[in-house]
Length: 103
Length: 464
Image (cartoon, rainbow over all chains, first blue to last red; front, side, top):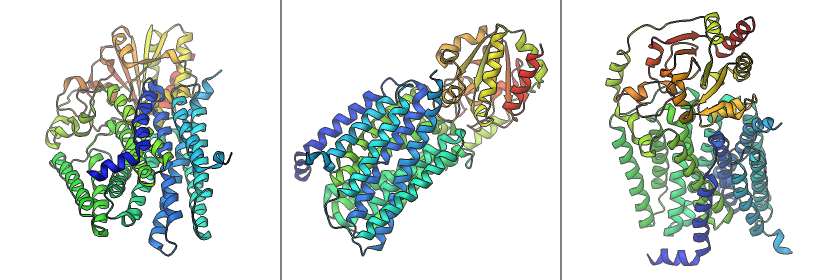
């Protein structure tokens, strides 16, 4: 319990960010027309590809001798990149259609 | 000035682009720009992390990271560009699974570095479990959307079974955290247990509910990324992850609302309650004959109608008939007929699927009527033309308590004067159930590929 309290007081800025971001996320989605649900889901999908930062950090911090950690990290970076690149490109392709609508 | 080039500052900019990007994605005119802005923010975050890392890193590790990123980019780009528009929902599911798998792998690697530290272990195991569930769940969702897995598969007492597995995972995770154990065996049991749970979690959920599941798994992966942010004290992972987690959750509820169901109902609900026996009994209960019709009959019928409502579904997307249907609509309008599209919120494979498809052909927005607005209009409608839709017009949702889709709001096409259903065959729809609408005396079936049928309709109508 003391560890938790310590953690919270040491990382108060993170706690603030979490709380504020939850509200930001809720507000942003609030009044989106149903038409855009699919592209929005796809866009959000690309953004959680930010997990790739974690995968890169794993690789950068890995012990150069540890083959297992390096190969798992390697795969993790590939998967993260797939998520980011694929996610944004697919979203862009979906939205291509809306652009045409503008006369 | 130095601060401008610091990693913290780059992460700040990057976080702002995610918020801005998601915001802009919410409006048709700005959506494309929003997506690009978020992608730009992601790019600077990735390069910033690599080039501004504090610490000695051997050159070959940089090499490995570059190879991985290039490989992932090329493959991701090719997949995203090559796959046809109808397969988009599957793609979202796959890419979501990749992110989940990445989170799970990070957990596997980092576990022993932090053993004994309660909170770090908590975030690592949290990320591992959520990432694994998201990965295996997304793969099942993909297989279902793809048609590889055709029908909901239900193990006996699956709700109980799933909850027990979930409980066991939680207990094991908390045991590891409390005991400070660094056992790799426990870790891998947890990993494979979570993968199994993801599979069992999605398997029993019916095809029609898959969009909700993908949206839910999407917010799961966001949460896993946020836990990674906590672990490394990395702000951009934290903001991006939490943002997607909360936005994804709201989006999930919005989709559930569109189907007038609760999330609990989707996950544990009526799709599970019909056991296989009563369902088999049910498929025999529909009696009567279907009535077939021909293109020229339908053309005559449409020519002398005053009001026609088109109900598009997944079949329209498969046949790539969106341009043909738009041409038909224009032709009918030029004959002075009132034509509209009735868009069920979950028609197709994802919410908004039909809107996206029809937007491609420049169908005017005000021709696309939403379910609640259009339902009262059906009784004054001469002809309802159902193209490749099935479950969203199945009256069993109103009448048959034993039906898996009971309670789902549908388009009340039954009240129209004439119903023309275009399908390729009598095969049941996505939920894998029969549709008594086809046996309705006012329904005529027009079999064939949507595109060629619509094109011959246009030719017939032009000659009248």
